[in-house]
Image 1 (cartoon, rainbow over the protein chains, first blue to last red):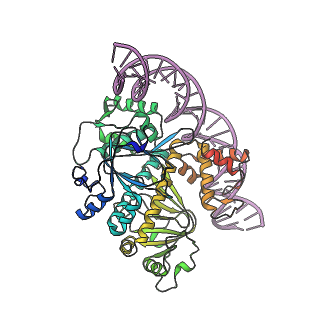
Image 2: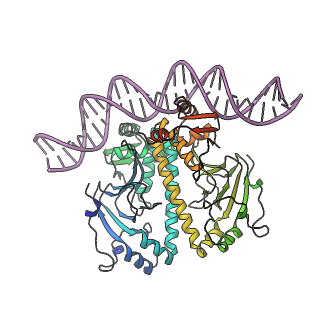
Image 3: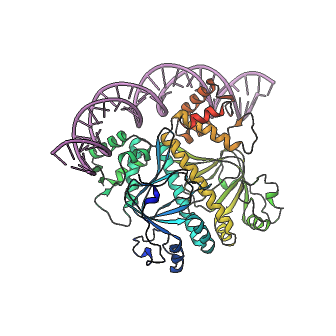
Amino acid sequence: MPPFDLVAERDKGESAGLPCAQCEQGDLAFCAGLSSEHVRRLVSILGQVQVEPNTTVFREGDPAQHLYSIGTGAVKLYKLLSDGRRQITAFLFAGDFFGLSMHGVYAYTAEAMTPVHLCRFPRRKLEALFDEVPKLEKRLLGATIHELASAHEQMLLLGRKTAREKVATFLVTLWARLVGDGEQPAQITLPMSRSDIADYLGLTIETVSRTLTVFKREALITLPDANHVAIKQHDALARIAEGS
Amino acid sequence: MPPFDLVAERDKGESAGLPCAQCEQGDLAFCAGLSSEHVRRLVSILGQVQVEPNTTVFREGDPAQHLYSIGTGAVKLYKLLSDGRRQITAFLFAGDFFGLSMHGVYAYTAEAMTPVHLCRFPRRKLEALFDEVPKLEKRLLGATIHELASAHEQMLLLGRKTAREKVATFLVTLWARLVGDGEQPAQITLPMSRSDIADYLGLTIETVSRTLTVFKREALITLPDANHVAIKQHDALARIAEGS
DNA sequence: CGTATTATTGACCACTCTCAAAAAACGTGG
DNA sequence: CCACGTTTTTTGAGAGTGGTCAATAATACG
């Protein structure tokens, strides 16, 4: 796990063309729907960062100097107990952002699961920009409220769902997140390991594996290989996920 | 559980003096640290609401028309599964607020645990006020980020802590929240039932009760009665809470 | 192709849940 | 103020879901 400082940083917007040009985001990203002038302002303060899989972007407790927006790739956020027990609090994908914090210190660790392209906003400069472009702050508030709602949903899962319900919820939710607009791919690629799934659902890898096997036996899903899932009976899975 | 419409609503700020005058909040509340002009603007849009214990303020799925700030009392937020399983996502106290939502619909139910005094801000008017007083929006963003951090902490608890660690965490955290500034009361009053504690920690009432009994036997706490706890060995409890 | 890592499967066990009963606390009306 | 019924909490016994430990299988990687 190379230290963060070693990751490559591309040229800023000043010198190159707008980096957003090749940014494949639709209305997902931070800059979506902003006037080109506002986008220019944003670009002038952001840095672009390429992160390799299994690289830590920042650690819980680090001084929170940046806000990150995911251009491409998948990121996990997690917290640890002193004896190593881990809770993954979120899997994030293109268009999501992370790194908000109170008290100037990150409350969780962020780690890339795939090759990740990040836009990095210096906290101070971003806050200064808020005063000029209030729309930005509104967007950030909206996104944070959305994250909070996801967190509540996850608390319900962790506290009150069975292993079977947890795994079904995971599959259905990930499916909904990865299958963007209307397209219905035959299968989805899991960017995370069984260990990650277990730590996200409050289970062990054995229970996750066993439950997936059960779903396969029940013909609810197929597992072409460990990192690919095809959902065969979405409605049935969704019913299991809701506990009915 | 009387419908929400029947709760009493006091006079608005216009007619009476500033309701904040008798509001006992320090720098906790929404209005803390604002200029008196800004407070006046806030007061002009807020309604004050008195809610009896066990009254539902709003339900998950209701149109989200108001943001609430707690003046006095204690509130619980929760989500339900269709078969009645419940996860309490937060216990809130004086100075906290709730009712933020995406998509115009509340994501959880809010219910008073004690007599509660609320300030109620109409969402539309509050948003209009944000454009004039950006400080308000910043404050709301800060508070939401704080809530999100609490949610992450609770996910770690729900997913990865043992019953013993959960109850210890609950006691230490509640103690820290209720014992505000320096004062060290001999005991704290639990505004919530064992059932509430269980649904907050992802346990059953039996396990909560048994664990409290064990802590009592170990002389970590005393239980004068069911609703009062005195923490006798805070450090030991805190160590248990952290899982070491 | 051999090694290391990850995922699956199996046997057993324990933590917490379930079901049940007793005890305590609370509320109500006489 | 006390007797009564109701609700909440505590305690007990037994069971089950998911965890632990261990071995095998599959995959990734050099």
